[in-house]
Image (cartoon, rainbow, N blue to C red; front, side, top):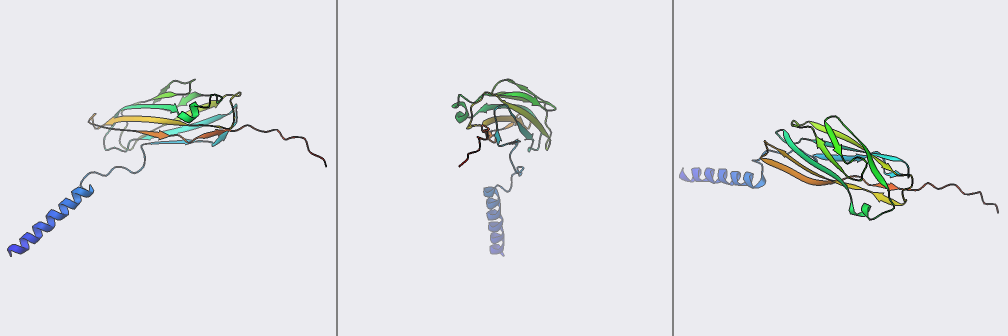
Amino acid sequence: MVTTHIRRLTLVAVLALATALLGLGSPAAAAGPDLTITADRQTATPGSTVNLTMTLTNSQASDIWFVYQSVQPTWTTTQRKDLKYAFSSCVADGVTCSGTGTSSLGVNYAIPIAPGASRTVTLTLDIAADSGCNGTIGFYSYLYYEYDNGKAAQDGIVATPETRVVCTTEPGPARTA
């Protein structure tokens, strides 16, 4: 009978250890990133616009109480001095942006953001009529937020989809043989 109790105790201990090691005892995090960014086009021409849509979703079990976000051009984008572009607008409910008219932004969200709630921002990127061509414009966004009454935080970098700036070509005269 003693061996039966020892076997049961050993089995319970092994299962508890396996659960702890696999992290099954901790609360599950929501699937997917907290910040998603999409672009309405992959290519653009000088003089056109591209709309970037960013959605921040609170995947935590408590309110988000502090958010810091910046949007900056990637290093490869900054190396193309002939590419001319600027953010002309930032449109959303509960969100304001600083830096409109430049190539980088700060995004400020109205807080708190309840669990499961989201805030969506649409940024309009103007490509200047005299911009260079055959280059790629891309951005990265650094996001930092605090939740659980400031006891926990998340941060990370999310890349935007890149937009290739192409020049339109005028059709040449028809060739005759």
